[in-house]
Image 1 (cartoon, rainbow, N blue to C red):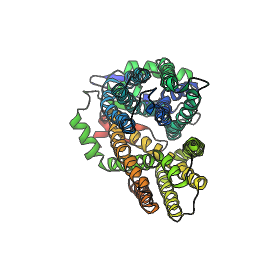
Image 2 (tube, one colour; image 1 turned 90 degrees about the vertical axis):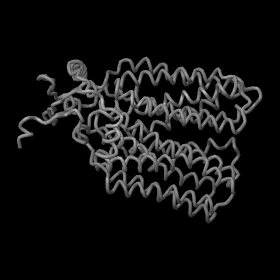
Image 3 (cartoon, rainbow, N blue to C red; image 1 turned 135 degrees about the vertical axis):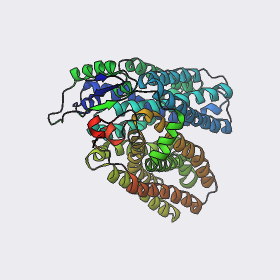
Image 4 (cartoon, one colour; image 1 turned 120 degrees about the horizontal axis):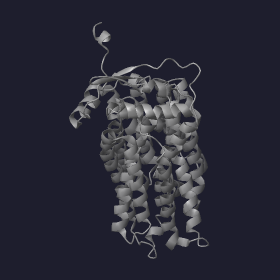
Length: 483
């Protein structure tokens, strides 16, 4: 309940949200908001699967360079969208922005299906990326602020791991729709984008029922609205038996934090956490993009795997990535963030390093190489998901979405723009020694991030967000100031 006294008010709303038992309402939030990662995996996989088809004269007749450039445009759009919509999410609310960003995705993906040439296709890919990038900032903020603290780690990791459901769906969808007995090449690629838009449109309708974050409403001086939302949620969910009395906060709601203050808080007040976030995001982004976007080239170049058989090697790789967060996710809440971040980053780097040694020595074949990749990414998937979890929970409420957007942009820009090009050149050289050097560098980044986490990781497990990072708008009680 919020009690107003002049310019300030007291509230126990955050504590009441954290003491709720998991219910159907929480499942609705996870499904309707977590679809973002599935859509991202779907987009990336569809474009990769149909890239050969798009070069045919009967479709768009794109060159290989134009297809590569369209991927860069998608990544550039994601970075732009994250930075733009991250700022707007903190200014105008989680709900407004997660509806807008998904609507942008629906419109852009629908328009992609009607592309007539590279200019339109590239523009649509850029705007689609903007929608996805904006989603990451708005959705991570909303989920963390609505999900109880004791299961926040597992929930975030499981949702991030659903990217690989989108990957599997994209692979199956492209195979079915491109089949001459179904739609064939001329129409199949258009239908693939159209079906992705239909899925997002259905979720958009469901999202309307997800409320605004009560925590965000508090800092915007709307405690009565926050109280109504929380009471509605409490009517649908039980309270855990051993729940403590919710902690009360004293809030002085003021103007939104300006960009200068955002930068000062992120990189001066919380500079150790900023260093941690940058290390985790850059390492996982480089690691992922280096391997995932060139795994087909590695298999065809060094193991003579036929292009039509690449999908067979993708399935165990995707399975390892999907299972990692599911199997290891609860340990992030049970054993703690520091232990699990260090373990997942360190193990994924070590397994990739072993893979590189065996590859250079010629001891692997396509199957064993894929198996080792799958083991490495079993840990790397949980590690990457924990990076998003970390940057979304260790900074103050007023700039949470902006923090996510900044670290996402830096990580995606580094990994998405540098890693695929670098590893593509290493593979093209045909030298196992040079590719091993690339593996060693990616592994070193992960191991280095593990060492940073060992020093700076925040013990955020099962703790309220307001305890991990005190809101900028929280003020001390008079009796606290007198002590």
